[in-house]
Image 1 (cartoon, rainbow over the protein chains, first blue to last red):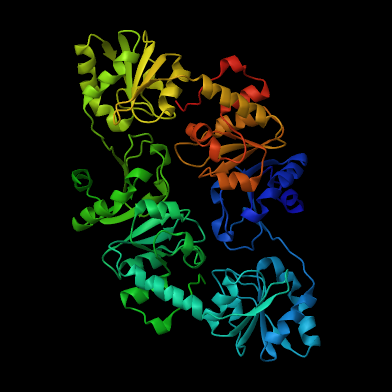
Image 2 (cartoon, each protein chain N blue to C red; image 1 turned 180 degrees about the vertical axis):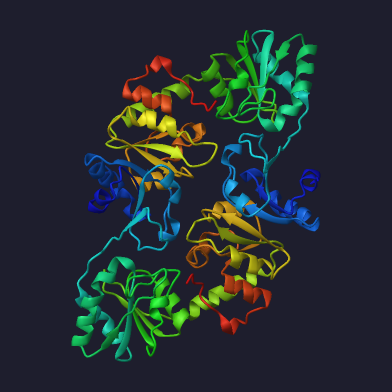
Length: 306
Length: 306
């Protein structure tokens, strides 16, 4: 609110990811009571890569909740969303750690707890470190589903991921080759990551794509997910491929098009997380290179936007 | 293809509505064989109101299949899609007609059959007429789910709709007050339209919306569905409403926002056809005016974009 007053804006557009959208009405009421004219983005929002910049046609400023800055625009304000937990929960991960030098990573809603986790680990004789990955992950220790750069720490071969879900730690293992332990700070459950099963699945998906008569190379029209140059490179590898431009990569639309396989250059998590929802194999750029014979299976890379 | 050659374009973007999307690969192959560089829009497409103009950043021309021109843009080519049937099928509608002077309407895929239908009706002693509605419906006799203008024919109080589905003839009855007979040309089944049940349902939906704490007035960001001025007018009627901007009006996103009710200024058919999929009442602009007391129930209007 203070930042809005300082800017002297009168109209405000609000954007929230799905988990925070329920707060829209309350925040709109508050701003409205203070005299601001408020509009709301009702489109799906998966990250700061997915800014509703078109709403700047209707409002002075876009306030984007829940994510750290990714696209630099003077008319966009980013409001992170923090989720607290007791750093002591990290003790439940200790039995899984093999060495003393530990890289720590988390997602944006928990980065403020990392100093507390460092204290607990140090008190137990560990040497924890974390660093900013820069670029798409400006906060120290922060990773995204499309960027594991903060996990690439010189001299560190063991990583502790503090957060929910298995995708981030899996990506970190694939991206870094480190031993990765994942700790869910809300349940206190810790697990060692094993990418083998994941890789076997991906191998099967690549093989299934071989028989496709047509391959659609998906290019996102979202401002922070557009990899057109990569799409054109992939297109040059295969003469039965077409670029397919999409805003939302939805299973229904892939089914409607009816291509035998797709390559995803939009949000990297789509190919990994949503395969089960898709009617056809959806490969990552690296997997498509394997299919086309320009990359060896041994050189498998996890898809990242750096 | 000839039109593309004449223009001297080298790159072509293709866009199809859901029912025609399966043709994308084949048409892309043809164009590609002729030396054109081809890209495809993978987004949902519900009409010519829903042009993928953003693809003109990547191609010289956008070829839009299945709909008649709505947005005039020199770089957009419209390719209609025709579905044939035997005009004799109109005989099965005759028992339902009350008079001799009959207005005829249909949807774009069948407009080329109207002259044949006129011949059959004349041979049976009727006086059939059809006319262009202009604007969003350039073809003679053509109606859209958002425009029944071609059904407003001076001196005509009986309309024969030839096409599938019940929404268009229902809309025509509400828009014109005429006696409307709907003939499905593929099954040969004819029915008389009765809007009473429909209106009772809409009445219930308006009443259900009264208890909403917050009301979201949906404004479309699609080029041919944007009614921002109307949205602002509706906003002025109610102090617990906010403008919600959406590209796709999806049930999931309305659920995520959690407002008690919505008003739809995007595609008129959304409020009518998709109510069953939505988690909350979705009113038309006219229904919202009834809710706010600035329109009487007796003045109910079907939502159109003229």
